[in-house]
Amino acid sequence: MSFLRFLKDKWLVLLTYSILMLFTIIFLRAIHTAVYPIVFLITLYTIALIVLLLLEYIKKHAYYKTVQDQLQNLDQKYLLCDIISQAHFQEGELFYEILRATTKSMNDHLDAYQMERIAYQEYIEMWVHEIKTPIASAKLLAENHKDPITRSMAEEIDKIEIFVEQVLFYSKSNTTEKDYIIKSLSLQNIVNKVIKKYASAFISLPIQLSLAHLDYTVYSDAKWLEFILSQILGNSIKYLNKEEKQIKIFATEDSGRLCLHIEDNGIGIVASDLSRVFDKGFTGENGRIYGKSTGIGLYLCKKLCLKLGLELTLSSVHTEGTRITLIFPKSKMFLLES
Image (cartoon, rainbow, N blue to C red; front, side, top):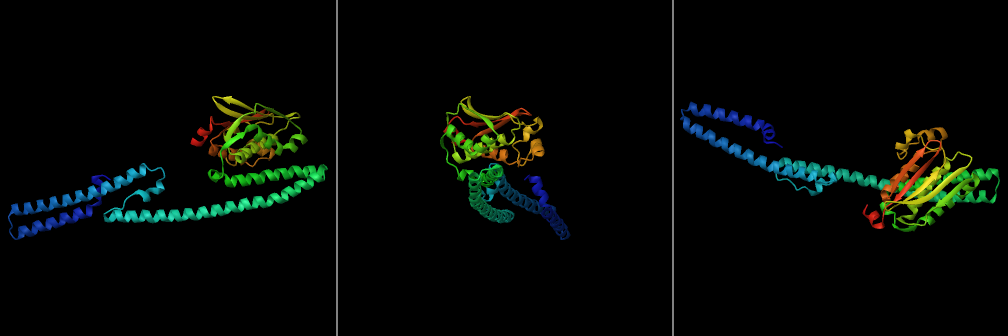
C-alpha cells in the first residue's frame, strides 16, 4: 500500500478539512483577525493532520506488509488466518474477522467433504469384499465343471475380478500413506505371485513366458507392488495378438537403480498416443479399436508409483510390442526420504 494510494482513500477527509479551513479563514478575516495568527493556526492544524495521517499510514502499512510477507512465505495459503495477528485498527479488525469467518466456513466444508469421502471409500471397500464371495464361488463352479462354456465363463469372471480389484485400489489411492508398509521384498516372489494370478491365461492362449535375473531384493509395499505389476501384466496379456505370444519379465541395474522390465510382442502403441498413456481415462487408438481399455489401469499405476517413490516408464513400437519399466530407488533410505 503506497502513501499516495492511502491519500486517495482519504480524499473525503482532505476535502472536508480544506473546506473547514477555508471557512475558518473567511470567518477570521471577517472579524478582522490579523494574517499572521491565521497562518499560524492553519499551519498548526495542517501539521497535526499530516502527523495523524502519517501515523495511521505507518500502522496500516506495517500490518498489511506483515500479512503479505507471511502469505508469500506460506506454502499452504489457507493457513494464513492461523498465523496472522489481530489488527489494532478498525479496518484491520474487520479484515481479520472476515478472513477468520471465511476460513472457518472453508474448514467446515472440507471436514464435511472428508467425512463424505471416507464414508464413500468405506462403502466401496465393503462392496468389494462382499462381491468377492460370489466371484470366488462362480470361479469354483467353473473349475469343477470344465467345458468350453465354463472356460469362457471363467475368463470373464477373471476380468470381473480384475476390475473389482481396480475399483478397490482406486478408492484407496488417495490415502496410500495410511495403508502401506515399506519392507524388503523378494522381487522373484512378487513376480511369481502375479504370474500365478494369470496362470489360466498363460495356459489357454498360450503365452511363452520368459523370466530372467529376478533374484533381487527391493523395498516397497507388497500389496501395492503386486497390484501395479498385476495391472501391467494384465495389459500385456490383453493386447497380445500374434500367433506366437511372448512376454518377457527381467531385471537390470542402471546407475545403481534396479529396473524391472515387462516386455511383450503385442499390438504396441501408436507413437501419437505414447505421451498420454498415463493420463486418466485415456484409451487411445487401441481402446477405440479393440474396446478393451478403461483408461484407468496405467493412470493408477503411475499415481501409485509416485506415492511409493518408484518410477514408471513406457516405450512401444506399433505392431511390434511394448516394454514397461518399473524403476526402484537405490536404497530403502532414499525411498523413505522421497
